[in-house]
Length: 116
Length: 110
Image (cartoon, rainbow over all chains, first blue to last red; front, side, top):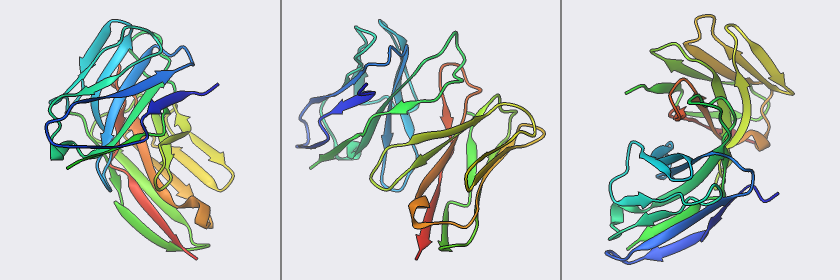
């Protein structure tokens, strides 16, 4: 099993450009998450999804959009990229029953994004 | 919102010394998870603690959950250069979401 796969691994964008960060998991996990991690800092939740067709905002959703049309895929869309969005983006997934999160999260390798 | 604080923020140790990081919450935790992130890598799950006062060991790593379930600790005995990285705790008390601690960055000097 590949686990959580993120593409691309690296990307440089110009201010104002848009792009989609791809995330797919093959573990049949129902919960998926997008985090950003600025240099030397912790993880900040951008968006999460508890199943296909269901998404919700995390603590830093501004400037981002997500969709979850299938269990496997959870792409993150950046519209009108800004320098403040330079960061490492991690996608993660977990399996949960009900509302509680008591299983490990599995992370992808991350996408390192620079906006110049 | 709910926050989980970790101390210290940074720790430099000489190889062979012990290391401890502490995770503190103002509210009662349901479960606590610990993750390790190597430099340039992604967080990797280490362990989950569920019961009050629980202690679990993984080789040189000892994890403890406080009696009141408001704090947790990770202790590494005789650190090695392979222990370098950032250690995060994560509170799983929330609905749908994991609340990650601020992290402790460990550097081991050979």
